[in-house]
Length: 430
Image (cartoon, rainbow, N blue to C red; front, side):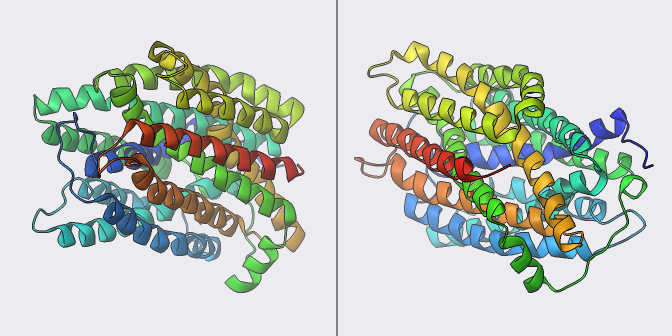
């Protein structure tokens, strides 16, 4: 009988999701940095269309790398395991490429565009090298559905913690490090948070003994055959499409928070700390009950309920400052944390782990990396859609600057994405 994974190892695994910090930095600060609001203290680096184009190029590179990295990690084997070596190799380059985003050359607009496309491609490639094998560790070392849910829950606890750090502290760090210079403050904030990201990844590298808990490996067949077997699973397809549109909405929602706090609610950067603390605090409180409810009712029902909540609350954001007084913005941010706790944190890795286990048993082949790689492809596609659409939507009815109408339109865009996600998750059978 295989030894159960001890609590300490589960926690050390969860600590390694620190790459959520750079995920949050990208989602919340890249667009803000390159296309800042008028009162931010920053100057635009590129036009909205060039920002969208550069990041679209990097996303295309990234989407190709996801299934490739998953396939390679499935076939790879070493004395440290199949997944851990990838995390070790990718951690430091991921940190360096994150920092590089915030040091674009000022020689010309064309040079800045090329720089952003190259740095973005490197960032997303190393993000995949770290993230896909890290997530594939759940079915790699978790033998039962309960173990996989526990690993996913600890991952979610730390993902929430890291995301909260990356959302709550930037305003304070920018003020502290910048001393009135926003550009310097943003850069030093990014460096300090990125160091924390790299340290967390190496906790998992050194303290999670993958070989001790993983099962015997069997990986046959070429990539084309494996992808064909995986994609033929109908429920997997519904899951991926539901995931895609959920994260289109969620990524857009995260990117909008800065604009809502400053432009709609009229507060300064330090208030981002309050809004983020409310959202992630309520989400953290809901982790334990979501875990328990998922055991009783399954992931699908709780996910559908979460999406209904997100649809209603995101529509509420689109009415903030018009039908709904701006003071209730903090209430909306607090309530958003409740459905986000399961839909964004616990469910994706847990559901994907169970799906990859089911498919591996059906094809008699350990292909978790490929499954998570495909999931990564769809997650990156969600980022691509968000980052291409948002810069163009935020400047609607303007002459290149962010407008209130554009911010409200972005909230409606998120709500529509959640509606489409609901339709696909409704079709998914657990």
